[in-house]
Image 1 (tube, rainbow, N blue to C red):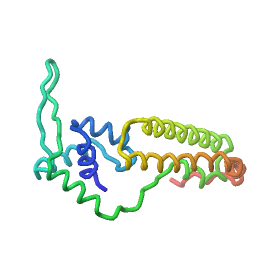
Image 2 (cartoon, one colour):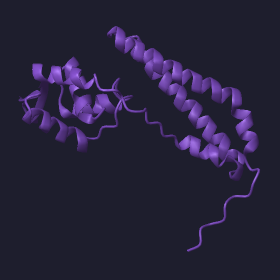
Image 3 (tube, rainbow, N blue to C red):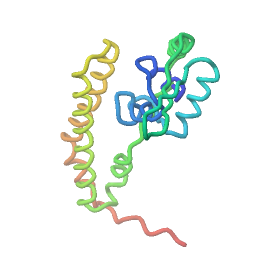
Length: 182
């Protein structure tokens, strides 16, 4: 899935400004699908408008600059559904925490413990966020997706809690890597 499809998915549900799309794609319920930045959202919206898949209108408010509000067209709705027929690519998972885990034997115990505590807090915060989202009115498909995410996050949290001592015991087993030669 790309940013264009993400924009169509958000606009399928409601009209939005580019800023609102960015917020929904980084902090809202769409933050779990595609990494989207202002630098990718606005060009995607311009292409969608040029291709007749969204419309754009300006709203003026006294004392504020006009804002562009985007809405999906019927052709945009059809394109979104068409794009969802394509087989999804693999999920992308990146974790700074796992890099620390990989090098735990070369790190002091307090560094490893600190990384574990931070990851536990992050997982708990994500679970809380998804739990709050699950209480909102939503489609059955969205509810299923949120419960899938909650299950993944809870399993990660449970695994880390159950195996943290094993990771902590690895810390400090080996000397740190020497500094790179200049």
